Amino acid sequence: MKLTVIRPIYVEGKVLVEGDVFETLEQHGRELVQKGYAITVATADVGQKSEQPEDKPKGKGRSK
Image (cartoon, rainbow, N blue to C red; front, side):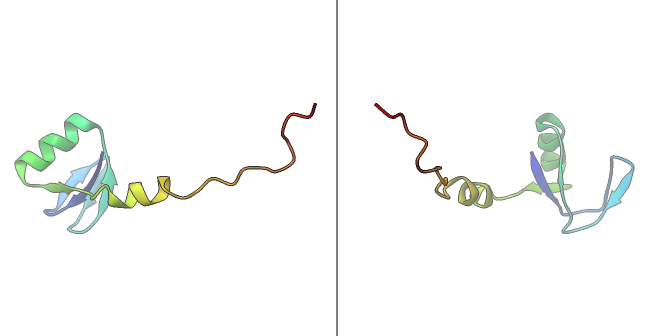
């Protein structure tokens, strides 16, 4: 789960400040959001990456 810090927080041996983006486990992320330390990152960024068409190699089809 990707989160954006909204209050300074100590995570994985580092102090993260407002605006930092980090990744954590789902349960930990939900706790931080509930306590007001972070907000979830919009999933629209992830969707844009998966919508890109895949390049298919040409000429590797099955010949008869």
